[in-house]
Every structure is written in structure tokens, then in C-alpha cells.
Length: 266
Image (cartoon, rainbow, N blue to C red; front, side, top):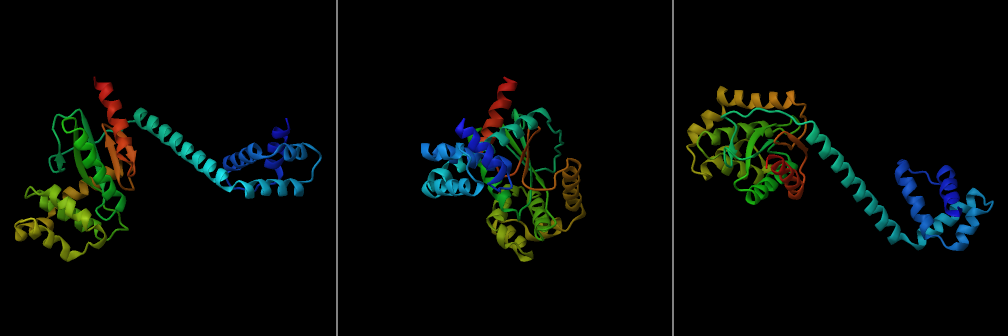
């Protein structure tokens, strides 16, 4: 009863933390660390000022335990949030279309298709691209990746980089060019694109003409309109057989989704 009294009293009058859940967690940890004498004092008719001092003393004497416990609490909360998001994504799957202009790799009849919406100046997209490489190595016969562009307005070189990648695609070098763009994502500029094309042995004159063509502008616009229709306004964004993944999640998260999808189809 003494601990319950301490928790209730302190939550009401002592700790001022914006998150009520975090406040409750701090108090529970402090209560668990308090000595019998401190609990006895808390259970008596003690002033708020004195109780505040007792709590501070406990925190000062056990900083590492408090920090470790709070970090575990935060990790548990994040995991639970991810699990809720995953269940919601499986329940509310998103339909998207794939056309011949969308670069693809992996078996055309793969049971799992990952559609990615990407910005070549986005560091999280670079991380997401590396994750998809690992996923494809893990599922070489079961996963197909489809690429779509979503250049964000705040990234001034994202749109020309997207056009350049589609121009490289017309010469069969999309994925090689894609990798070079991400390797240079923090230093993209107008002269970068033709240089990367030359480095890959592309016909640079044809590349430059394609990059500036209305055909590629229309392809890019289609990707962006599809993203807008789906409500996507940030990158990277992935659809794994319609299951949405927002952001650059680690490979094991994708594995969890893919294994569940494969089980559904078995």
C-alpha cells in the first residue's frame, strides 16, 4: 500500500514531465528502488517538498539503473508501436500499378513484389536501397523489386537525378546508375549526370537527349501522381504486396513481412 500511495501522491504533485506515460514509468522505477525507510516516510503524512527530496535522492543514487530501465521502456514502446503499425498495414493493404517504364529486378513471377518510392537525395532512401539488396539476396527467387521515383521539392537535385536514372534505364543500365547516384547523393550537381553515364559506358549524347525528353518527363510525372494518389509525401515508402512500410526499416522487419506473406500464399 505504501508504494501505491507513493506513486499516486507523486504523480499528482511532484514530477512534471510532458509525457504522462513517461512520468508514470519514472515514478514506478523510483518506487521500486526506494528503501523501506523511504517507503515508510512516503506512507506517512509527509510534505510534498520532503517527498520530492526523497525522489531526487533515489535518482541520484541509482542513475544507471534508472536510465537503463527507461531505455528498455522506450524500446518496448517502439516495438509495440511497430507491431500495431504492421497489423494496420496488413489489414489495410494498398493497391498500386506497375508499368513497363518502371525499372524492375527479380523474377517477374515472384510471389512477393516490393514497390519502392524513392528520392535520390534522401539519405534514408540510400539506406532503404541497401536493405532491399540484402532482402533480394535472401530471397533471390521470391522477391521482385519495382522502382518508382518520388523526388521531394526540398531536394533540388532529386528531380534531375530521377530523370537521369530513367535515361540510363533506356540503355539498360538503370540499376548500375541507381547505385552510382546513391553513392554520390550528398554531392549531386548538374555535371554529375553525364559523367556517371560516361563512367558506365553509356552513349552520352543519347543519354542527354533522353534525360531532357518529354517521354521521360511524362514517366516521372506518372510516378509522382501515383504517389500523390496514394497519399505518399515522404520517402522512402515501400509496398510489399500492398503492405505499406514507411521509412528505412532494417532488413529483419522486411523479412517479418515477407515471411508472413509467403505463409499466406502457401
